[in-house]
Structures are given as C-alpha cells and as structure tokens.
Length: 180
Image 1 (cartoon, rainbow, N blue to C red):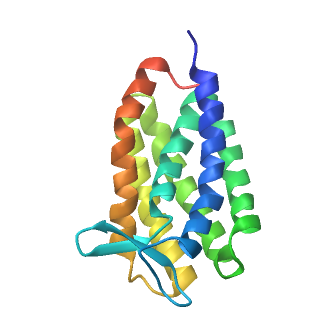
Image 2 (image 1 turned 120 degrees about the horizontal axis):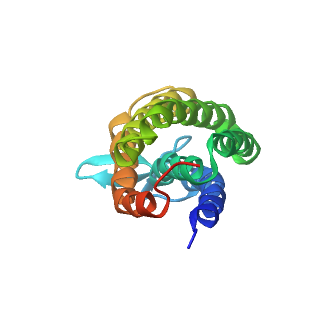
C-alpha cells in the first residue's frame, strides 16, 4: 500500500496549520503572559519559552516529511506558503519576526536535510531540525522582543518536539524508503 502521497499531503496541511496556531498561542496561552511580550510555558525545570515553541519544532519535522513524501519542490512551495501565511496571520507586532524567522529556519532546515536524507533519514531530520530551531529561535526572539532572554527555553522546547517525532520518522522511513 502506498501511503507516501497521503502522508505528504497531511504533513503539508499540518505544516501550514502550525504557523497560525503557534502565533495565536504566543499571544493567548501560557502559564504567564508578559505585558507587551509573549505568553510563556515551562519546557524544563526552571526554563520557560514562548508558548508556540512546540509547534514550530513540529513544523521543522513536518517540512522534512513533506519533502520525503512529495519532493523538494513541494517542500519549497510549503516554505513559501508558510512564509506568506505567517505574514498574513501573525499579530502586527510579530509579522516581521514571524515571517523572517520562519523563512530562514525552514531554508536552513531544507539545506541540511536535503543532502543527508538520501542515506540517513533520522539523522537528516534531527540535524536539520536542530539547525532550523536555533535559527528560528535567535531570529524570532531578536526581531520580536529585542532580546534573547528566552533562547534556552526556545531551543529546549523545540527540541522536545523533534525528539518526540523520531519514532514517527522511523515509521515513515519504512513506508517511504526512498525520497520522492
């Protein structure tokens, strides 16, 4: 049974859904909401991050799934649509930060994932997501809040999402043994 294309299309839709949902969470959901700042959630003992953190980590992995199942061009289309969606849906104070961070992190993810995915899918997903999540965190926090105060929390929170996805990536490797 070929599930590659349906999985790819589902990943594409979920990838695009991560962006507005993460932007909404940052503004509305958290254990504490900083005035003129983000809503925060705990990501480790004594460590907090803006609440959209897990969804952005997931988006990095979903983009890899899109590329694995639908190909490089579909992945680049997802990045372009995601960037546009980010500018349309982000709150006014976060538009630039969200769009630039999203675009740069996803392109970094693409650049790392693409050459590695042929031989080592799980390694490609982890390496590309780690690079992408650091780029996203630094760019977003700097542009959105003029500070890197939540950098450690951002990195840890996004890394949790990547690590949780690894069993699913292993299943994908079996279902789609060769990239599209």
